[in-house]
Image 1: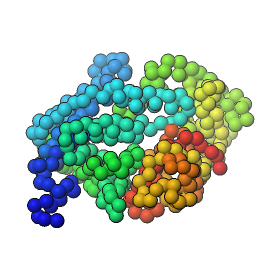
Image 2 (image 1 turned 45 degrees about the vertical axis):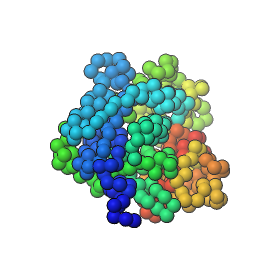
Image 3 (image 1 turned 180 degrees about the horizontal axis):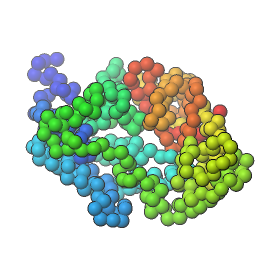
Length: 381
């Protein structure tokens, strides 16, 4: 390749000054550092923040609009580093594509992961389309994940820092999206490095705490949000054992999750009991011993495949899978039942596998992510 078209740090064959990058800015330290880093390197940076949700309206009280604070912080970073910043109102899109499904999934007894749907349906779809409308060469985010070039094109890999890795939440990134996305923080060894960079650039968010909650559930109270969206969702019902014997009363199915042990209010019955199933139609919470939570066979659908060969080109794939964001990948056999469906067999049973969670595929060795899909019903071993 001639010297005058050497690849820049984002892997594009032109100088940074001629490379437009849209940076998805949440107002947090991670995306702020990405924007500042690229601006300092001389890229034509355009910061975009999405107004997704009005927390003040959600909680029906003044002074609760975290979204407003984040937009303000993102704007201050753009002013500090001297690049343009835009705010896009995506509230309707976000409500339809993420919040409504979240509420319906909970009402159906599932345990949804709205952050994945937001990446899939809003950030990496609508925002990415906006970036292309702005004639950007690529879009960068502050996610902790790596994009590496493989034999057949870009590959998705886990972040260098296992404690910060966000691969579970990004499995549905398609090959086409991956060709356009960049993740400049994925190679960093720790969050401390990110904060040090924020301090180096003099960013006003250098010491801003990480957000812990789902953005539209700012105090972690899922039930209150769902009850507001679906009046009557918190109707009381019965807590029963696996034989149907009534053990007590509950205050609404939406207050419980698969694998839950605490807060059942049915102590003194001998062995510890866990929530093993939720039946929204009969308003029953079914409890049983820990052994009843054990699952080895998991049906998965809506699979996004990031392997080199087509997903259903072979009878089975021997990979590792993650069925909860907080758990390490475990060995499994994935048997395709169609282009986007599969039966996943765990070599060792897992507890608390829940419909609505993601099942993400990882290489047996190394850091590559092979995509994943959605668990839609658990089949006990």
